[in-house]
Length: 128
Length: 139
Image (cartoon, each protein chain N blue to C red):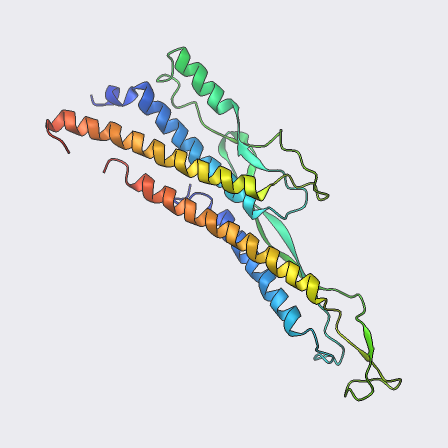
């Protein structure tokens, strides 16, 4: 019975984006670990995850498709390099991206948290 | 999935970089060693890394790759020959075969290894912060 309450678009989006943030953290960890591996191509979360989320949100079918949407890792097709070893990792960019990703993750956890707090408040009738 | 995302990738890299630092330390320490256990001058060691396929992510995407130390191999280029007849390891013609350690190379290697180590440590720090935040959901 409580299920439909957790089907709001905002909550579902935050959950999916959290999955994406965690996977991106893994990709960045892999990129920084392989910063000196010749021929390594940097990984990133596939861009079609965000576009799929957007199209599902706009067509109002996010709740039906919540299980089929999952982020995946791909080799970044846009990464270019001038390094002779063919490695496409730029460590400064990765560190910046990691910090941005952490802030995004913090924001999303806060959003999910607030959603749950509101629910608790509605159930108990007092501030929690 | 780990609680600390990407921690096993980073652990491999930290370990590999630490081995590289150890080897650089060994090279610098032996920069003047003209007689090793085999009676020959010390040969500098170089570390080569290998990628390690960790797991395939679901949905058939690219897979995560960690690194580990593949091989520690000696650099076989000859060292300098220095004229020093009073040296205990001097040959008959008065020349001493010195190790092929180049201090400048070693220092550069030392710096890049410790910078790489620091970068990986900052990944651990951020992953930890993310995990702590995730555990606060609903509190």
